[in-house]
Amino acid sequence: MAGPSSGPEQQYLGLYSKAWSDELAEQASVVFLVGDVRLPAHKEILMLRSRVLCGMLADLGPQEGPIVLEAPFHGFSAHQVARLLRFIYHPQLITPAGIAELRQDLAPLLRLAHKLDIPILVEAISKHVIETTKNASVETLVQSAGMAQACQLDRLHATCVCAIARKLVTKGDKGKSTNINTALHSARQLRQCDQSMLLQIIAVLAASAPAGSVDLQGKARPDLLQAAASQILPKPVAASNKSSAPEPLGTPPASDDPMEMLLQDYEQSST
Image: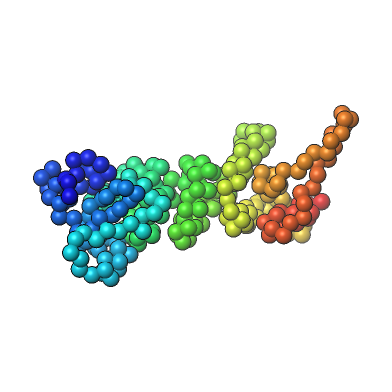
């Protein structure tokens, strides 16, 4: 096998001296096949870092040549897998600064680290996401919450959902009009949420409602929910009329969708 003079493997083997990195490439006992890219690796190191790879490699037993692994990396780029190997081969780089450098690769790396069961990397990425929720946009938080849900990271998911709800509740120091516009802009980004996440966001908003926003029946006022619903539910079609007088918008069709039914119940309870 040729030495790592160029290519994604430079992400991890290139941190050693050239002579050593060339030798490591030549002595690879495992090859990660990502598309048409072959990434050399070493069984002993992989088995120490990843519980999933440890089990897979142990089951395969001794081989005459390098073991080729392809299936675990479907849906990931060679660059992303190489970045994962960088942390596997150089765990001292799993620092706040090292994780922050991932940027757009943060979500794929968390999914891959979770898939391969690399606890130290999953924990480091989760901690970084939690620490950056305050300054993250609603869109970023929705993506992070979805990522956490897919990886069954309950604490990270709950943190992101609460942060989304907090972003939707604007402060009253910039004027009512500005606050409404800000809330609507944030609500538009909820289109990416699935029904489960929307229900959780609504639950957080309802549970966190200040005393002044609860009616005599103990129900949370639906103002914020209606603003969000206007961005989520199918847009009603205005009735055609040549008169200058505005016509009321049509009502969305009845649906068995539990999310829509919940929002409609909130709207009816406010009338």
